[in-house]
Length: 79
Image 1 (spheres, one colour):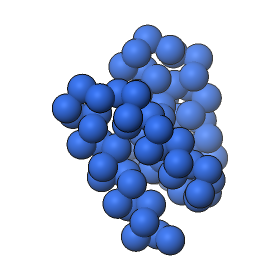
Image 2 (cartoon, rainbow, N blue to C red; image 1 turned 90 degrees about the vertical axis):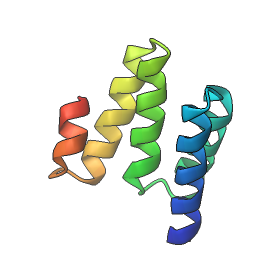
Image 3 (tube, helix red, strand yellow; image 1 turned 30 degrees about the horizontal axis):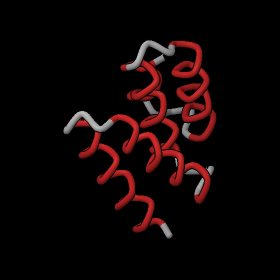
């Protein structure tokens, strides 16, 4: 399951780089639904929300990722 989440995350980031933000969001949502304890999905959703100007959604996703990995400085810097 961890490898599947990692693969979804890679595909989602690739879609985002190609400009398919809706497709990336769908994959990150699949990640968070399948593995809600995986901070990568929440961080990805937060990044997409920030990119599209939805700052309250971005903060909520970053806070969720931070709850899952409180010592992760990358997540703290996103907040």
